[in-house]
Length: 294
Image (tube, rainbow, N blue to C red; front, side):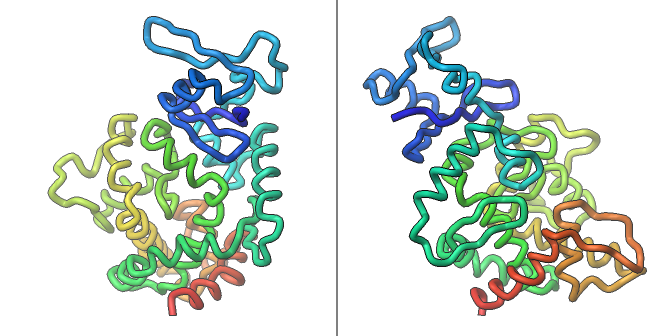
């Protein structure tokens, strides 16, 4: 078994190891695996602050642990199509796509990787009750909320086990979290605006000023939970519709809502333009959401 790539936190400390067999190991699990000689081309080094995994001296540059490392936020940005995948991620995804070659139905989000429709549907339907309740609570179209979630779920499918291992260790500025991939800063802003508060009894919320990593970790415990992540997404949609209402009614414009979900609140005007991602949400994922929720 070989290490395909390593996930680090923003300080470049390793937090997860991903193999060519699609297994994801925490640091402790990876250390035990090296001791049991389950990994190729690596060895252990003991230091004052712990045990570390290092590449064998004769390992090629491309197989070096440092070359295979990527931060958690970078991985999320790749899944979101914001930055280009590294060589190690490209190799991992190529293996993933080869492993699903016999799949008959795919979803392929804009600027991302194709994934089995059945996997996205399974994850989506496990949250269907929350989606319906959140849409009702915020008086929004449940299919618009569902379409946005389909887009987010599909983008994370190849990396889902990895994201689960990363946890709060990868929290940094503008890190996206949870099934709805809500940014921590956006969640805090929606609490400030009194649109949605996941825990009114939590006196720390909302945080004022620029968020520290300690603030983000505190908010993470809420935003990572599907019941809150999906409600934050619904709250965002509600706020955007109200924010733009003096100029245009976005209630039945999933293309614009989908665009703004990924670009921010935007600058309200009578003639908004959608991006390709927003159009896919409106033209492809909206109909899937309607099918899976009805």
